[in-house]
Image (cartoon, rainbow, N blue to C red; front, side, top):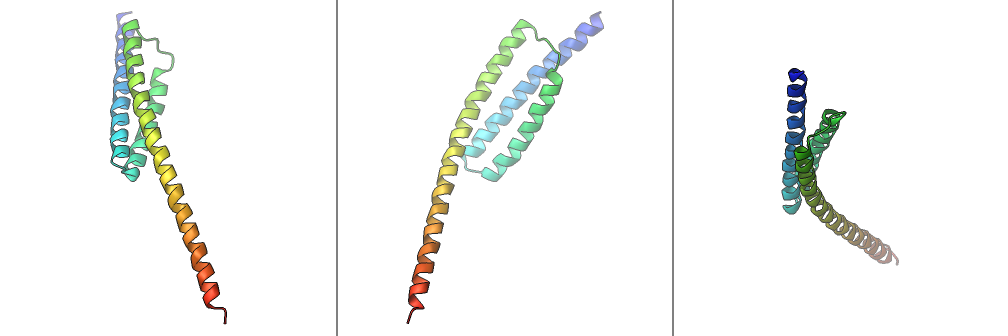
Length: 121
């Protein structure tokens, strides 16, 4: 029986370590969003998703000790704070890109209008 407890304890420790790693990735993603490094943010997000998938498999069927449940909740709370700020920055970026696309479309329309009026004899 001690071997099962040791195996379960290791798995529980692995789960908490995975949440800590997820938090570290979340912090890196936030820094990339703050730096407006969108390409690197996408790369980091791909790694983050893979970590979440691994954690889902690792956590399946495991019951954490009460202290580890508390630690997991703390880590998740921090991750959610990071996630909210990342989403806010992405929404700002989306609005900025929409504005730039709108300006570009208006500029093309003006160019077409001027070029067609200059071709009129």
